[in-house]
Image 1 (cartoon, rainbow, N blue to C red):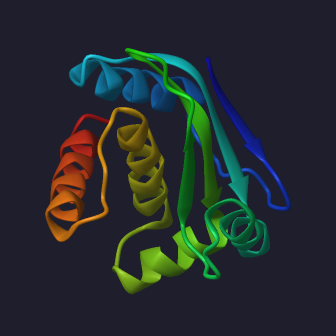
Image 2 (cartoon, helix red, strand yellow):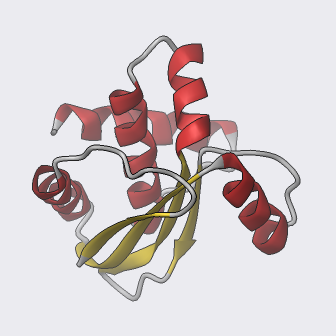
Length: 136
């Protein structure tokens, strides 16, 4: 089941059935089944708090994924700062909606096993994000 909640922000307008179907299709492309996944939309203050508490990072970010995947069944909590998504959309000259979908699928790709620590992994992640965005 995919859940969509918000904390300290108004939830973004999403066609949840469409987004859920898209996420399932993307996961299936990687041989995965969607289990319990929660998207938690929040503000910069909350994501900074999470980043400090759990990752020992003292900076803002757009998405943090906690992976609870077991075997081929993906699961996790995906925190997304809507404030950072908005500023990134302006910086990258894209729409808020497109940038939001990019970070949502970024979290799902992490649950599917994709990393982005090295420059090569980051390049591959961006490629897979773009492929996924074409599927929606």
